[in-house]
Length: 355
Image (cartoon, rainbow, N blue to C red):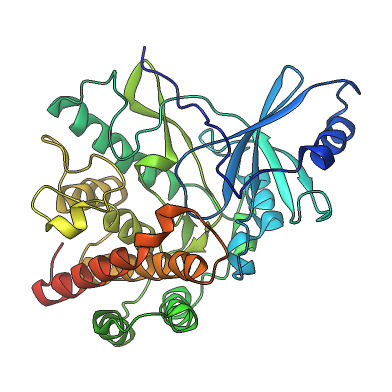
């Protein structure tokens, strides 16, 4: 059986105030007054922070905004909690929320607890005890594409998830919104970013019926069964989820999907072993998804380019936090190179007209 993804010591500067948190959680969860409360942090992630919090014999996952963030709408704990409250009953891969804290005096921000979904998480490289064969690489890629298709098949009306978004005009708002976010966080002059933004604004496709969107669908947000790494048991990190054009979600997934023939600067920012022998190419991933859903890929270049652009802006927002001294996390110092690599890839895709 493959090792389960486990937390690590909390990164410097991201510690939780256990002096305030412990009595609050004991009371909120009905735990004994002498129950031990401890916290560790899950690795990975550059946005909302994720901790394993033990309260006595019970374990929970705590989510809170990053320290020093200025982008409040991207770290809305109430909305994330509300979404999971509606999603968990209709999606077995969604963690169940347990408690929402609106009192910012406890941790300096709102936060919530959810159940811990244990399993294997594939990050940049597979766990040491995993032999990542071509068969496993292809099986995992297939499972990921299937999981995205399943997500887009959820009835957003019956679950009331549609109330958490505004699907009409979604693509236009996204292109305009992320362009403005880039301008607000800009530090360096990168012409490719501006060129891609201009192209996107002039090539927006018509959208099909809206679905639930995860908006951050990649390997390190998937929990896999320890005895079968081609079975997705949970999907994590719902902070950017909404409802809208499902191909925007596919485009985001594809922007994370680095393949074997991509340039070195893009390989350096791979979010998982999607480039391993046997794995899908981006075109194969999109093709499998299209066969499962019946959706057209005629405008897939737009959706892929937008995914790259949006992720470049996210990297820019992360980088500017480091530049302004809001975080000391050394991972953030190289994010500007990610902005350049992603924007350049979007330019290449637009010029080639394909994935």
